[in-house]
Image (cartoon, rainbow, N blue to C red; front, side):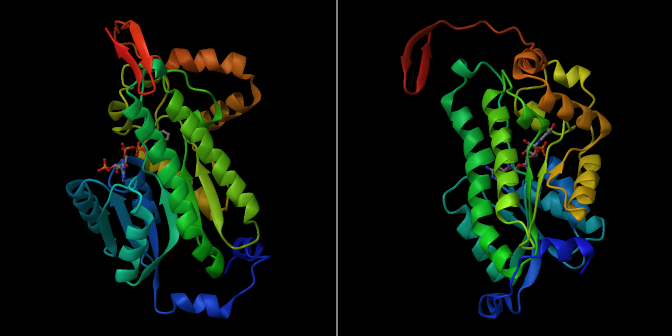
Amino acid sequence: MGLIDIWKRRAWRRDDDAIRAFDGLAPAIVITGGSDGIGLALAQEFASPDFATVLIARTPEKLETARNTLNASGHNNVLTLPLDITVATAAGQINTFLGTHGLYADILINSAGIGTTGDFALEPVEKLTATTELNVTALTTLCRAFLPDMLVRGRGGIINVSSLGGFAPGPYQAAYYASKAYVISLTRALAHENRGQGVRFATLASGPVNTEFHARANGESALYRHILPAMSAEQIARSTKRGYSLSRSLIVPGIFGNLIALALRILPAMLTTPIVAILLKPRMKVTRPKITNVTTNGPTKD
Ligand SMILES: NC(=O)c1ccc[n+]([C@@H]2O[C@H](COP(=O)([O-])OP(=O)(O)OC[C@H]3O[C@@H](n4cnc5c(N)ncnc54)[C@H](OP(=O)(O)O)[C@@H]3O)[C@@H](O)[C@H]2O)c1
């Protein structure tokens, strides 16, 4: 055990009865969104012979491809669980899956996330709620499901994937940016509540990364995709592994990312919000429909 672990465990007290529940089980790294983009790169970076790697996402074919990619890099202890983590039973299903394979979640990486771009008032309500259900509710539920056992073991950790967008309001990606602010706030609060108990907490807050995320979020036409430098998922994963090893609770990859993070944190919102709005505004020509009848399900359009 290294010096960082000794310090992280300074207030932890072993409970022999509770810890016996994990006898015979092996540690796993559980990664939501592990089939693609940043999640897959994190899986590559964190996979090790000492752990099983469990990849979770909805699409079985993408999970299979991801598993093959990991196998090809010499990581053979890889399991896949096709699951929509926004369903109410997701945490229970993951727990059962781990138990069936003789594993426990030593490190939980919440990478699955989606975004949505456009005028908030005109966005389909389903898109907005899908964003908060995945980025906020599912992430919170999984942290709550796996943290108590980590505290019993006095080891392990949770990495929650946020974004530089979590440091500022994001007009035209309003719900997405707000969801990422929640992730930063939640993770830092958990790190404080559980300090000294042996569990590491990290928020990953990166700038743009070249993945399919932007196309899925309808963000490709926005200015930020054309003028802001984007990192690769592999660079992000390397930076995250380094930050996690050093037990940093906030990981911002890259010099440019750190400069932006600093600016967003020290400049007033009245200055940063209009700049972020220019960067995020979709450039496609949009004919704004006239809002005629506002209901609780959102406006209907002419
Ligand atoms: N890309 C960026 O520029 C960037 C920047 C900062 C932060 N981030 C954050 O990084 C995280 C990963 O983004 P990414 O760029 O890697 O996105 P991505 O390439 O679109 O990958 C998203 C992953 O999440 C899975 N997923 C989506 N909905 C799910 C659900 N309901 N249940 C389970 N899995 C689900 C996807 O697989 P299925 O579709 O098969 O389920 C996929 O594996 C997100 O939280 C994002 O907000 C991204």
